[in-house]
Image (tube, rainbow, N blue to C red; front, side, top):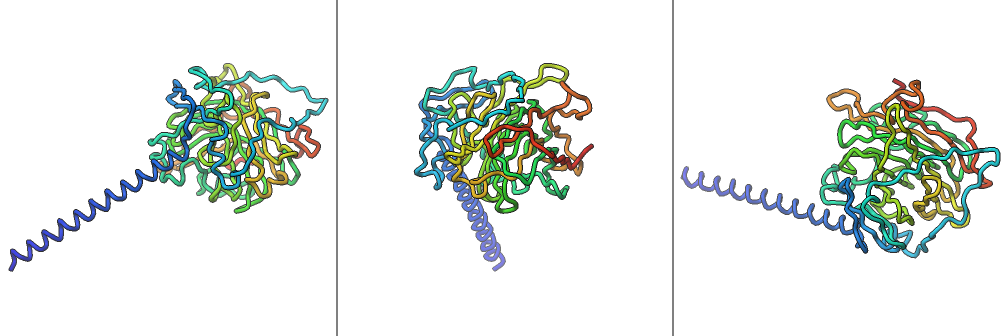
Length: 374
């Protein structure tokens, strides 16, 4: 009887083991299918591809076949190839010319006319974040909390802002650096936000540069765009990692790394950004380097930003994961304080807003917010 009982127990152990193994394989296979399906959705067939020295692969995708048009609100969207107009400048303002910055992939080729360069997403890119669903998305705390500071949220900021108005865009030159980032899931960025609404109704359009190892698998500063219409809850993403932003340029790719960065006590480089609303179509356009139109966020993506922005912000952001219970060593900007001055501290210059007359003007009554002054 004892032998039979032992034999029965052994069979039960084997059965449980087999069940666990089978279930594990099913789970693994299911994840593999999800990854392949997601890659197919993101990586549209290109007419050609370019292998970049930074290990990116750039696909030259027909402009009408880019991910934007998978969005249900853009099924019947007609591509706007160029803005209806550009913002006018105040006649009293003289702008300093910036050195144009280029992207690394352009060293190895260019995309044909009527295609757009899209950074290819690889399988390993989807394995780095905690889930496929979170890939390429910010958390819902990713807007500067300029009234209250909660150190448990992880995001920290140093920003200037203009509030409680009607704004139709912004222009800024952002000093370009390559900050140290302590761990892959942290990032360091410098950007502008064009915002309306609050909480779950918050609409935000964002552009700038960032170093984000988990997203890009390196520490290079890269051009990025972002959008949300519900406070980062379910809508929006970085770059073209979901449907939304419509790219029109064949010279730059959102998510692409830059060839040059500023050096401490050396040459300084700017990323010049202009975002403005096309009042004729309702689309929000992005231009960099004073002349290169990148694309637009369709007005139909938004609720309150379908009218105007009520807040514009410029600044830096990092994630503080408190590894080992200590504040992160991730740098913001150049990693040096403002009192060190030009060529040492990172800067934003030529801050402008677009007013109701479609004119670029200097903002009035700027507000400063930094949750860690030291």
